[in-house]
Image 1: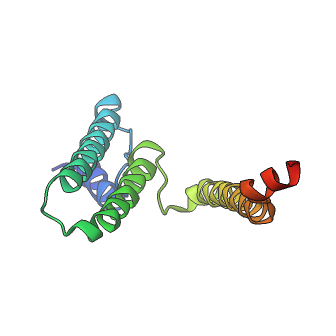
Image 2: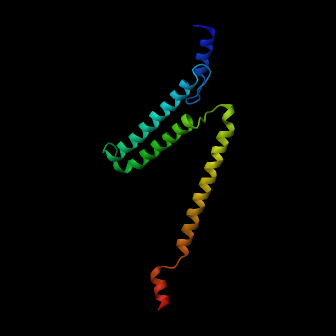
Image 3: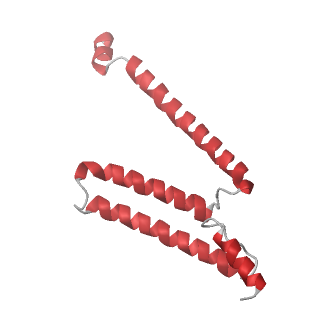
Length: 133
């Protein structure tokens, strides 16, 4: 092997999945990463449908299995499609993602809290009908 190919092979070992180096092969390496991500995402989707409709998993454990598969699929999307890795150049991307998750959690949690409070403080319909008489 030449020195350049040894250096390229050593660099590929230090890369995270989905963080391809586009020096030599260019588009082929990038497409390979997207195809691997697509196959993994489709496989996780098929596995979730299979576990949901087969009797392979104990029925009360199906939601936990679906949650685990959903988290795995989010990881595949983050790594292979959004190219979010642990490298030092991705710190801003990770912080932006964490901030986005925080904002979405606050909006959804606050909305549920407000709706639960409104539901608790509303009069029952039978009481409203009695007041109208």
